[in-house]
Amino acid sequence: MNARPSCLSISGLTAILPNGSRVLRSVSLDVKPGEVHALVGESGAGKSMIGKALLGVLPPSVRQVEGSIALEGTELETLGAAARRRLIGARTALIPQDPLTALNPSRRIGPQMSDRLTHILGWPAERARNRIREMLAEVHIREPDRVIAAYPHELSGGMRQRVLIAAAFAAEPRLIVADEPTTALDVTVQKQILRLIADLQRQHGTAILFVTHDLGVVAKISQSVTVLYAGMVVERAPTPALFATPQHAYTRALMAATPRYTDPASSLQPVGSAVLAELALEVQNADNEWKRAHG
Amino acid sequence: MDSARITRRSGARLWLAGFWLALVFIAAVAAPLLAPQDPLAQDLLYERLPPFWMNGSESGYPLGTDSLGRDLLSRLIYGARIAVLVAFTAALSACVLGSALGLIAGYYGGWADRIISRIVDIWMAFPPVLFAILLVAVLGTGLHSVIIAIAVIDWTRFCRVVRAETMVQARMDYIENARIAGFGRWRIMLSEVLPNVLPPIVALLSLEMGIAVIVEAILSFVNLSISTDDPTWGGIIAEGRLSIHQAWWILVFPLVTLFLTVLSFSQFGEGLKSRFDPVLR
Image: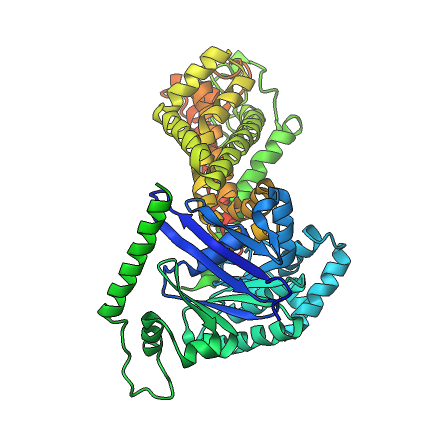
């Protein structure tokens, strides 16, 4: 079954801040073709950082010092800068967290959406335009021509997120990084957007690295999960197995901390101090090991 | 907030300022057609004629004459030529230079930012008018040195504003998207960042045109601009100052013209800014 190369394979990914502290501590994970892989953790656990590292858009203060990222078997490090940009641009896409800032306010929607098609894939403008219109229909936008000619501020948050989802799928990428795509939206829209992403993902057979802090979303949408804490992989498992038999105490604690609307009487459990102490110890051990290995 | 009222108010401001600037611009372009007299023709019989509503005024000299009998209105109209020329060339040069450096500093950050920001800090420590006088003294008097001096001094305004705005825009997710779409840094700076920092640039450009007019007037006032014969607003003010007790109008009319022009430039810029802003629009 695993004869095909992974869609995305990250191993030993380590990134540091200027002061030397590690934001990613030897992260390894695998996303199979066409699967949704959830990346779960608290704020600041480095979830988004992994997505940014693989898309080549780490903030300037963060430096990747170790590890390899392979897209469909191609190691990004072996490519020159231009070839890497082309590969990333052609094979991956991003559904960003905040649809309000992810569109350029001074450009019309249409040209923004077709940037990648015309620039990376070299499509003629007409073909790109048709493709955009097709994709807008796929995300259930009723008047595609009006939206294509609109400026971002003329659309609602939910509409913008649809536009961004359409843009992400337009170039038929193999892997989409969805960076908490529903956190900036209100609850009623969240559900629709989530379903939309799941539908498109199935139809197009695209693999998704789904960054979220919401275990409810994880259960609904993903086939496998990586749990992160402080830039360190705590647990990695197929989704059903993770929910059936969580191995790590932190995973169990996260589950206990998830609100259940069906059972509001059950009180929320914050992550206990024993678990935090255990995690701190693990982080400490990992850091000591890293320091030993790097003098 | 009542946004319709705000728009209407900024609209009135925009139109009033635009009207005056259009007047000045037309005066500059069509000076030979509009001026009732030759601005350089002296006539000692007609010296210090008062404006048209006062006793002793002469027809053909609606705003009176200066101490050499030259027609004041004609001199103001011809003075608009130099004012407009300086406003456009000097302000645009300062704008292009400052905005380019500001974009680079704001987008690249790191060393580029540190170097450019330090230069701006040092630059702004010089008192601008003294700096201008010094520059003109070094470059030699003349219109080109006035223009160069203004550009060299005032690019820092644009640099600081554009740098700050660029830093804000560069953090936005759409820049990240453009990077993932494979655009290079220059392409991103010019086609993604620049249009979004344009509203403050336009406002500042208009303001800077007003400042350029003032600086030119100051340099004319201290006789460091072009030759004294050519009518400049600053030059007329300098002359008017000498005969303030006999003929106040020689001082007052150019002052009012200068004031209205500078005010209009700044108000026009503010009005444009709110028009340009895609969110406020």
